[in-house]
Length: 558
Image (tube, rainbow, N blue to C red):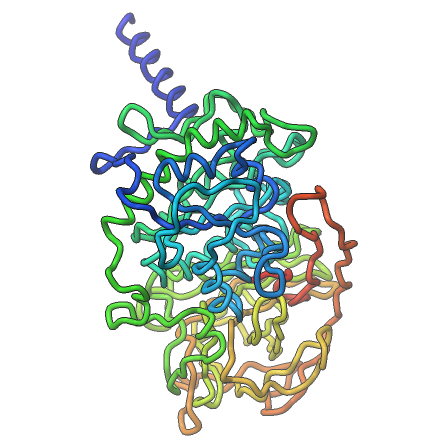
């Protein structure tokens, strides 16, 4: 009995420790020593970052120089089209995944001026900025949604959209292993309303973001500014030879406020003390693995071109090329549904059935009346599919629903054009059928500009989706899709069990106009600036990009 009690007590203690703190195991000894020679660094921020840098507040700039970093910064009004005004989480895609990314980032790498109240005492070592710090301001801790939300395409201030944004910009960081990018989490708010969401998102950034993306380079790191400011006993620091990310007090709000939600001098100085050893560790990890080439993405061992350049000049994909075969872990397909009425869709690669190979995309949906759901995937850069006649895929019905469309997208996020081809399910059977859709069968959706126009830009396709609208009767079913590919003028369906699904009882013909579906009401939110003097987030949905079975969109970019 005594042994049993001791065993239970030991289990309780172990669980308590694991619930309150996390000490990251290190594969090898970390190096918290500063660089041996000055290194250029730039900090992209707004007023919270300015206070942190300032000599009479957080003293970060002074501490950086004491550790051999030559600091510069951006602030309001900086850069092309005053991009310095836009540092909220959804804005990072404009910096790192937008049409002007190449020009913006060259300006970032070249910037050598001071835009905050701090004094530089060390000489400019020359060359480009080697380290880029990015931080959003405290309004970005007002994340809507739920703590466990997964990555969801969109540019609203939600947990899912924030994860989506950081996943997207990680693809740019991957093209620049010659630079070190440090993400600094947004500071907390004093308002506890959404604080659990902010905590969960920042925990994801620190612990899961890079791991979930299988990111193995050493040029990206995260510093949890948020956690440090939630309690005197909460830390993200190097101590006793190890990195410690510890939450001893389970509070998610600002412990160090000033007259508003800007962190106080005391909070900023605590952050400075913990940040510098961490930055040195991040730098030494990166320095040990940095390539010698200034622009490694242009070398043979890094053939990936700059993302922004890809978005202006799409790589051509040969006719007959497979776009998705679902054999690998292609988690880029994501389901979204009308949450207002609790419609649902599960959209995952699945190994319980396939047209070829061992996996297919399984979509199980329950779309309530006058609602929608969609399963979509967006490419990292536009695809040029103009050498093909159209797109084809294998379709299998387990439980028939009512209507599905296939959708294609062009244009950058926030200015995306949607084209759809409406189909009904074939009769449920155990057979896979091959569906072919010509490019000019797709029409611009009616709730966007130039609705009904024929699709004629196969050289600039940015994504695909399967949409499931519902009328009064709802739309419920299970279908599978496999082997999505392009096809040429001379090719035919590989398994022509049925030439095409039917629309309203009629065979789908080349230029037949899809039946009109009920257009959902436009979501309207007053454009407003929250929390003056920090942040530029206007919490305005872009509208329902894909209604009635297409995806809800926001004015964002990943």
